[in-house]
Length: 118
Image (cartoon, rainbow, N blue to C red; front, top):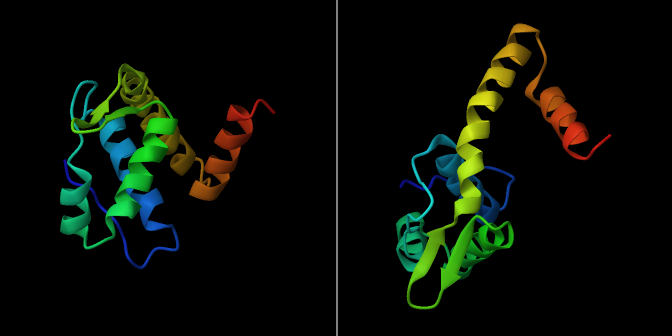
């Protein structure tokens, strides 16, 4: 698993770490039962504070995507499985939006509205 961040991005580092893990879950590179890299290893590899990585992992835990146990690290839960199934649909939707000339921001707004039940 390769966690990626962009130091030039306006997005908070912890949010980028969580998004990178979500992307790996969605593409199937990480599956339920897999362990995430130790927070200390990630912090060292990325050159960020340990608490930044822990905040990202806690966000994933709060979403139900990982289970965190002291001494055992963070493990991907079964709740992450649907992400991979949705990924194919999202890719198809993004391709269709590109063909129709919709911007990524417009597509994101449409998806958010739909997900919010509007």
